[in-house]
Length: 191
Image (cartoon, rainbow, N blue to C red):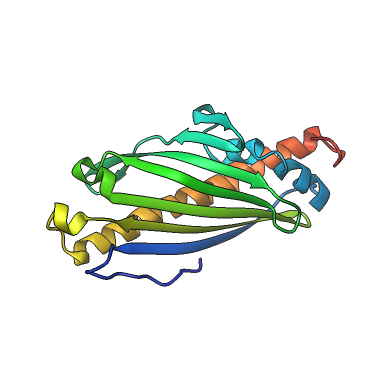
């Protein structure tokens, strides 16, 4: 895993960010088949997220409500509006979190912001998935007297959990869904 620089300043919002990349081999797949699979963004999104909780809002936008998970003493549940756009084989599928609300942080709900931009590109029989993730606080110092030495580890732990979930969903959900779709559509022209 590759990490981006951390930017932690007391006078500015606290920000923790990461870059993560995983290369996924898809059995019996060609680049053309993977391109066809990714070209309908709803397919990979439903493989990456709980398909029962993904709601198509039209225009490439989807609403997703995550299941709750534990973070320290909090039980958080993110709600995300995602925009997914297929460009071409070179640019791949871009997934952008346009709005993310984190429920379960109590007074901190509106003060913590999560951002994610991801890209999935077909390369031969592989999908290369890259994501840039950031967690930022706004106004926490004035709302609650929590020192940076406590906020930073909380932010890093939250990103650890998100990266672990994304990695698992890529390695299992996305790979399995792509392999099933390719088996059902052996001709790359089918979509």
